[in-house]
Image 1 (cartoon, rainbow, N blue to C red):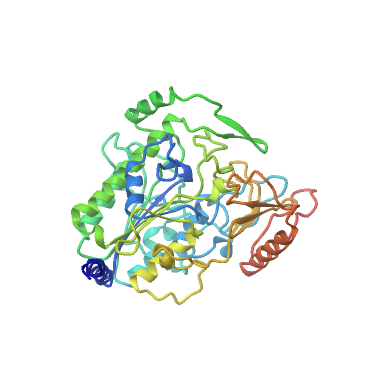
Image 2 (tube, one colour):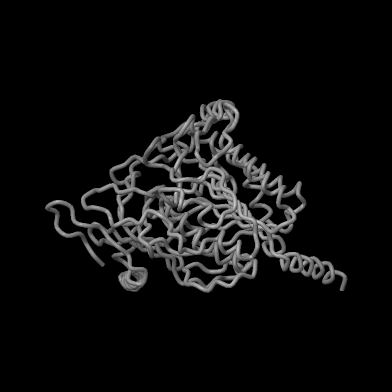
Length: 471
């Protein structure tokens, strides 16, 4: 009898705490690959003790995804719970690179009629805070304060820290003021601002959304950490690059500057989590940790390897869309638990809505992940991707669908499909399309039906080229 009492009382306690509306803390890291954290990769070159500790106190997802292989569309999905394809927000804002054909039309802002995560929580009397990269609109009328955030520290049109001294102050970011003392590191400044907000609002329900500029280019790290990883890299040998279509792809993690950027970001995560502890509100705060797309492996320095995943940022292969996903929901998630349920960035909003008792009265694509957080199955039928663009990283315009263990990729230049069993072949090395035509037909039919449902747009003619393929 005593055994059942010790289990029952804490559960009752936690449910009563969360009935008082949990705080919400979101960490979104830019360009962080699935294999870039120790919790997912025991052989990781980069050191991420604070993120790994978060995983040990929450639930880690092995099959978590971004809605798109580049940043702005995934950020849109996190804020709205929708596939970005529904509004033609299918590339980074405002990327319009051409290839054999012209890209699909691109909508390059998150319109004000969207109900964002912040607006939803403000309706529940939450204080809302944003820090870091926004990249969801070209001018101030589409930036965080216009989309439900009470405070904005650093979010504007740019997709990277390209002004001032970039990752070191003076930053000359028009939304990060006052500027920092000479030489301060951007991840630390963003963490300090987030921790300050947490301390000031520990008695109110709040949303703190820390959207790092790290680990996006420019590749620039703290000198002490760069030297540390140069020494570490000197002990690693082997081929650093391999082929991927017409590109070279990094296949070995040993980039010292990138490693320094990852560790500095991890330190910033630790600082913010410590602020929860110091404020005494860790047990009443949901924490989400994820990335907006896969690690950069085929361009702009190709600083990380996503192996065994294929490709990286800008590719609809697993390396471009499978992300680190950690969720800590005290009283619901079992510490150190692991889930293989398929989840996606479209699920953030509905999961938080469920936890705070907010009713969603408009159509979204995401689902409430609470059953998965409780160790149950979601019963999700499929996930979809649509990227009708030529990425800066060499990625092929294409779409994909995942059903169970299987993933179908469709090339938009020619309509060719490839089928992979991700359970047996996470690296997408063996195309099963010719040996399993029935599955190909079923998945392709489902993918094409989704294209119609979301009014997907496709490649456009270019010059004298014949009209591009259409589903």
